[in-house]
Image 1 (spheres, rainbow over the protein chains, first blue to last red):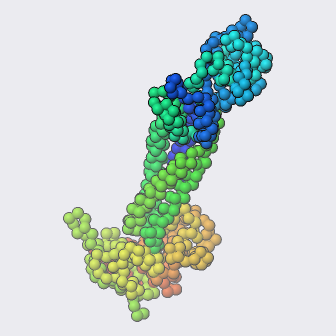
Image 2: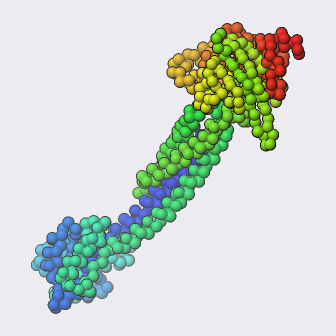
Length: 375
Length: 235
């Protein structure tokens, strides 16, 4: 009974710490992932080109091609103001952007129909475009029907070669589905603006985000010699603040986990204390029969170790099962955090050992006669 | 019989109770030879339990010398005393003092375990001791399944298992009815006839006369020491 209670204390302590830490960790990584899918690997560059100092697309491509280790994709982004038209239907809020063939990958979106803009389209200034699902359904009824049709952008006819799959949950919500991409070479011509002022990069490693950002800034400084003429923004800086928030929550969580371990530990301690008091008579018998103090201590410590370890292992199993169950219910990928498993197990077993040892040491010091007389 | 088994000389055991000094043993000198059956009799508070603790190597005297089979016990430390108890003394207690969660065999094996007797031999010797008290069939039983008399026999078996030089019985019949008391006393006599040295502590003179020699303690001093016949005549 008493070993069962000791075990129960440890089981609850270990399991609750594992569940708590693992589930919150899973939630945190879910949040981090969803931030990452929003483009945390994105660096955006905006330039102010002066007649004296400027940077051409070719120079930017040159830089990109020299650093494919650091940067995964690159695309100029040229914003064109205007309306898109099909027959008598027109849309004026559609975001018209001139991009490269990498842009789809930068966004990490997929096409639902047709093909992407290609390098040849850019070189040949082909009047082709890729449109968002909202544009396709508003003007043509469906993405399938839009493909291959002609669309007019500020009066110029463009051929729709591809449609990007729907990003928003609701079709009525235009959000990120209301756009038109064309080769940036066409956009430059259309905007009557010889310079390209904006670029998007994706980086290969989130961890090195600030390093790669600096690399890009250094390149730009060399060209412009003036920090006010360019800005590089890293989406991952948003992630940094998210990470510091996570660190804060984790620290608070560690505190709570610590308290539950402590409570479990106090329970174990109480049971151990009572158990040794109860067993003083047994200690007296053993001493009278010639057990040395060290032998009695050893017996109690082994008992405490076995009891707490079994409790700890059951706690780990229960905690893991409960973590997966909670994860399944909440739709999170929750796996027991190794650190939580190791720490909760060693702390609770440590407490079990310590409070098995301390009162046993006191009891083993008793004169066997006094121990025998205790009732 | 060159060396006596027990040689107590000027044993004092003094407790300080607040400002008062209690002389539980006030200069006791006593020699017991191998093969004797001695009853130490005295009223409660006479100091007989203190004397038993010292003879049983459970406690050390404040002053005086105690030689057990020639070994100087009075200056030993705790671990040495534990070894002496284990090797030389078999205890029989009033309350049997068996471990409730161990079966009879495990209970009897206990002193052998502490003597580091290997498993096989330990079981054999413990079983033989149980046979000696006629409980070998019940070796799997737990103490609470047994009557008081049977439990006391188990504790005698436990005392015998380690093959001790001295069997020290503390009020061995105190918790038993007269019929089972008789059985236990006859058994002790039998063990004595086989050559075991037995020291029995009791407050009851009618039990004490079952021994062959009686030592009476009063106020921490021996005030009678002689054979049973002489003791019966002073009663």
